Length: 305
Image (cartoon, rainbow, N blue to C red):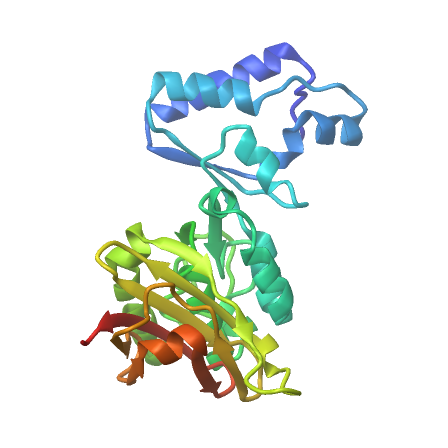
């Protein structure tokens, strides 16, 4: 059923409904929020619709300060709904590109402005999509999760995701089939959630890092997704993944602009890997990486001397 948003009475009634809901919770997820944009509504139904989201969101925020609006949105209309007042909008584009394995398109996606990315909802599962554990190979899944959830924006997890559930069920059901617990995946998410509590990820400054060829004629640098987090007191983090089914090599360069003249330790927060590197080499040449298929690192970088 489609309500008639060309009717001012409908717009007012739905605004009142949101006001009523705002007395009972801290935020709402608005299903298929782009469908009632005036241009979409008119194109679909041949009627000029009344603007709804700016009016309703303003009224609710006046009633309940800080009330959160999240939009389920597709068709590349995320920016439009952010401009209409939504705090967060679904990032289905990243989800699709990870499924396709298109690393160049993924890096292009991350080149958008931070003002836009900070309002994106990053996810690998929701009630409308297949289970990630049933879609990705195990190693690819972990690399995709590191890329998704350590990028800026809201991190969005689905019930059963941490346990590796593989059967998608209707959200209207209150039961699910028994499935074995995937302890390896559960341990992975436990480590990832610990990283998400890191002050750099919560409050740091994010930036995309270039992945340059390791040597002439080696194009496997296109396999990498890399970005950094930087905070106060020279604290740093580098997140990198080889998102291809073959070994790949690259240099991360430029890395950070204050590495020169010191020694640095790269401690992987997702494994026991630890490397010491010279700051002058990092400044002039970059960080060399030779990584296996779907391998990832989350390096906390600290100055040793």
